[in-house]
Amino acid sequence: MNYIGIDVSKQVLSVFNGKKESRFKNERWLKGLKSYLEKKFKSFDQVVIIFESTGSYSNYLKEFCWVNRIKACIVNPKKSANFAKVIGNRSKTDRIDAMTLYKFKTVIRPEDILIPRVDKVSEELSAYVSSYEFALKRANALSNHIEALRYNPNAPKDLLICLKRN
Image (spheres, rainbow, N blue to C red):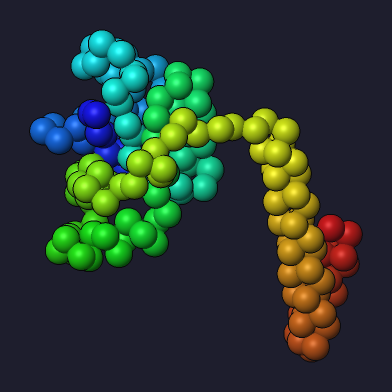
């Protein structure tokens, strides 16, 4: 197997293949990463991508693996942080994180390597639920803020009126 460690950030994927680090834009379909993998490997059958589940930032990579039938090991961030401590990595850079994820291959169990599954319906529902929860928290925070301003004798009345409209 050819293992690749990928540190995912908002805009960039830092990729380490055991010898060299490369960087690719974190965008839908990951054309740069795909081109790199096609040049480096004849087939994706022998490739395993190791990356952390970093919420929304890792979604493009997960979808990329699913669409291109690439095996992956998606690591819990807490597990990879503990692994980094065990192997003595104290620094925290994208390059070092990619190298650490690459080294994580030594502790991967075969059942942890699979082609990620993307369920579009559940992802859509999750987006609705998280947005609804966010809106509720914002509304509650605004209500609490207005209540606190009521107890401030110097709070401008026009500010309270404006906030109540929202």
